Image 1 (spheres, rainbow, N blue to C red):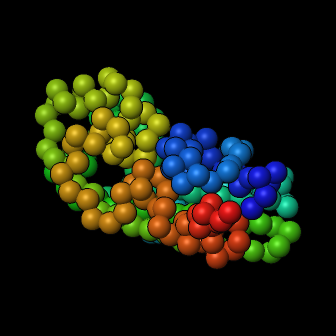
Image 2: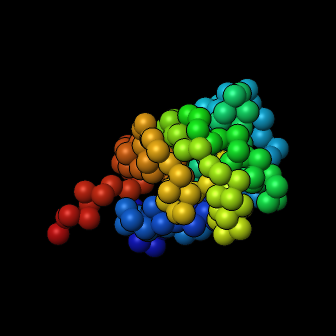
Length: 200
């Protein structure tokens, strides 16, 4: 990828920005205008991919000759998607639902470039369990403000990580991007390859 044409990240998520910076991928942030709440599906994989594709296509429509990456993370429990909490009470409700239970975190990813007619997508699932939380712990965590812009009302890479007792699958998937799968997709379509950084 030319340094003059960085990948476009169709998200304002600081977690996804951090992960791309960790990889060393040159990128530019162009948030999607798609409303996640408007996307509906009966299964988490379908829901996350549908949202990621809509986000990527919306931004790609503005930048048809650039590679666009979009993602959507869903926390799934008892057949219900837990998105970002609407307020502090909603965050408390979600944390009480999730405590002491295994839930599924699914991130859908879409990488596309309109002028080349290329689009790749995937959905990755990780199982996570939080320990049992006391009402005081829930109140404290909500008071930090960290849960308010996180799917499922917790951040595994932040303070919320102190409540996580088990994880099965990709850690970065829970943070917001499944890096093992993403790296392979970017390499496959020719958007970016970490091995190219080793070339003289």
